[in-house]
Length: 193
Image (cartoon, rainbow, N blue to C red; front, side, top):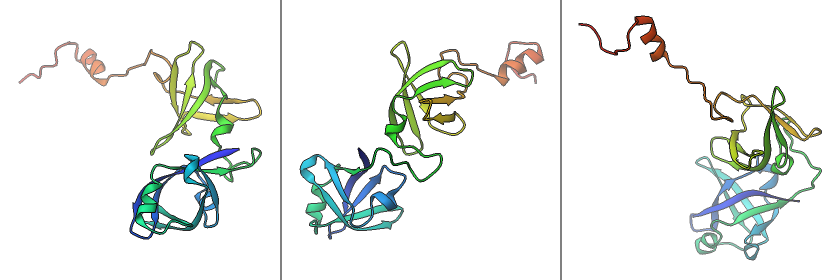
């Protein structure tokens, strides 16, 4: 099974290094020197990592056979793809590969059906489940501990505790302004002098 582990960014310096946008929770395993990675587009690879280092919070890689800025720049926007065993699990207890989550049924804690995960969107701040509802519409559910209560791979389901308005159109709006108006006995927002 193939897993996208990074996207190559711009060239860094003149010796063939590139910045990479990491798309794996295990960069030390997947992006280590000596790793051979397939690419998308396939014509750019396979690429073997020669060196890797962190500079100003960004991972920089250099590949065998790429020794100058022009060669590095030619790789820009190339996806790096690792071959993994489909039975392999991430090291962390609450970590999952995308392929494990795709097609899981999404239900609320009380058992109400929400839909099926069709895609995982990886954003800088968090990951999102893209869930197709039974009526064909989509809803985005943040993959955060406060909302995703349980991932049960045996039962093939994700149990969520959505806040009001996340999966339905009937958001509950609490307004302290309304309460203040009711308590003061008036609808006007004017202050008395």
